[in-house]
Length: 401
Image (cartoon, rainbow, N blue to C red; front, top):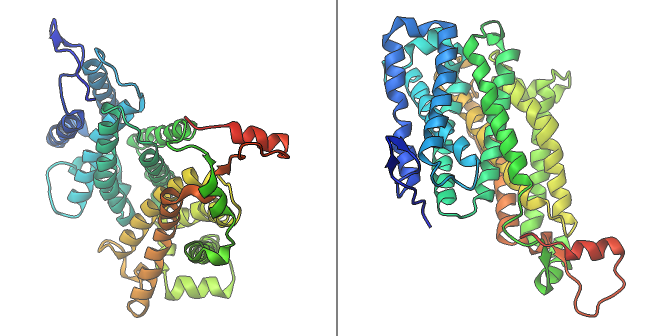
């Protein structure tokens, strides 16, 4: 059922009369172009603190706008407002990336100079493309699901993982990289885009799952099979172990390990890890300290039956990994990256395939868990079955509504 809010009353919108809210959000988001053009044309709007003030004011006005047009029939999910406001900023990020790549002009020249100069780095450009296209599509789909009174928890977890990884690497990379001495007032707006997905992730993790945690005969049959008789899971375990090794070697490179293997890898395979902009280094540390334990946990989840947490965390890490790898691969190949930090020609395809396979492994695991979840469910006792410990009896009674 679509939203069918009331019309106007006394000149104030009490609800939304739009049958397709996602279409309206899509169209309204492009009003950001007018704001950018005005700021780029009026010198008074180009001072660092003025940019911060206008940025905050625009976010508040956009939020109030959506709040007013839906107050007659407010959305049941407060994350609707996050998605609607962030859709607006997606257009700004896309314009930033396009202007830095010389595809368009006349919108972000002022911001390149007095706003956030680090947005011109290859990593940040690819990050903005991801936000302006992939996140934008996610927001519209999730808004559509909310207005249809349908669930979007799985897509929401992918979004939360993606944006959490996006912003945590971006903010830390600014501070730790060569742009740490060029932080302008507009930098502080970025913390909003970090805190919101963290809050969104907590909200989504604590919501009931779309499927029950309890399985019957099919789950019991699936969980009785050894790994050797589950070829798909066996392949995934091998891929996860390889991904763990890949994460470890690149993490040690980021930590300046004196190991010869690290020196060989960064010199002959991915010199981009030493790019002074800081983003590649910070991303590898994120994956080393957070991604590596999760990859190991997924191996355990494929070996030990009944790990109900696999369905959530595989989606979250898949979102984080694909975003990080998109920005990392794209940044290392971008024309703005200095030649000495690009992938050497002799190993280009091997490094590219390794990075793509690394990005795809968590996605494959998430698809495996979502498409055939029986191995990861708790098994309910059959009628008359006894002898279960008290803790197991309680587990079998818990259902996810």
